[in-house]
Amino acid sequence: MALRHTALLLAAGTLVLGGATRGLSEAPTFATLKPSPLRLISQSWNELQFIQADQQGRVFVLRGSPVLEVFALEGGKLKAKGRLEGSTIGPETETSAEIARLSLGGDLWFLFKSPTTVEVFEGGKRTKTLESTWQISDVAAGSRDLTVSVIPVEINTPSPESPTLRRPPEIRRWDGKRWETSIEGDYTDEEPPGAVSWNLKFKAVYSSLIAFTPEGDLWLAHQYSPRVRHYSPSGLLKDELVLGAGKIDWFQQKPADREAQERSIDDALRRSGFSGTMSAPGTVPRATYRAIAIGRDGFIYLLAETAGGVALDRLQPNNPRYERLLLNGCQLGAGALNFVAGRHELILGARQGKGGTWEIPYQALDEAKWKQVPNAFLDGIEIGLDEDPGPPNRM
Image (cartoon, rainbow, N blue to C red; front, side, top):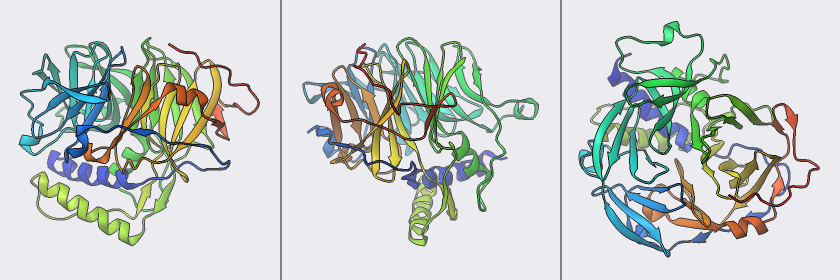
């Protein structure tokens, strides 16, 4: 498929998926938690904000325009720490980064532009640009290395691998010279209940969020099905959590929602330099997970879309429970979210600076009335119905 044609499909698919929300079912009544708003200068920004934390829990904010500026969150204020210079995907080129990740050491930034480009910055300067032949879903950074989750779609490559692969790549790592597949996935025969393009189907089935623990374990959460996987540093599957049947929830969009998405698609195409229009599909998947963070208290935290709104979920590998709180008092908006673990709190933020930023201290998480999510299965066994959760295991 030509790159131009693929780019059009990617632009459309991304916007459609970003608008599909409220996926996980609600059986019990969950307690609510209200994050505390942070009064930051970023509330005056109309541009994107990317919030990241290093291994020590220091929190940084990257402003996406008019230049790529880095700020440290210290004492409830943003303090300027310099710029990222030399980017070819910054706002001045009219193509902004979709994901920004900070290395655990805090000295490297990785900027991703869909579908395949990652720029690396060290000391505030762009040092290299990496091109993946597989479409990238998410980016995670270790101390010095780069890992991506991918959708099994090859783009603009003269020698495609897919015809010869028995299993598609799921996780790929840049080893300093080339991309290598570290974890393989599975091809699916699941079919949506309606007319859906191959691009939309693949994004719904394979899009995932990834994050590393300090020990190098990888956690992967599917964005459009209620599944969470835990891999060892060597890529061995250690655990898999599934809610219910673990299936994608496809639904028919309302005409008004479909028209609004078509306007957004047309705007995105014009910004990308393409002419013409595209139709939004009627059948789309509901989102499940929108962000993942590794807490400094030993828990894995996820932001999930539910019938009751955005929820904060958590699990701990050595204590098989999967618990939930509903968040209120923070309007996070649609699309990707900022979500990181600071030294003393979780930080979450909207996609744009003006959308707001909030904090949840670990003490508030300790005192909250968490409730077990029903129909949660860990490695095929239902969990957490009678167990005592016990005290948190702080790092």
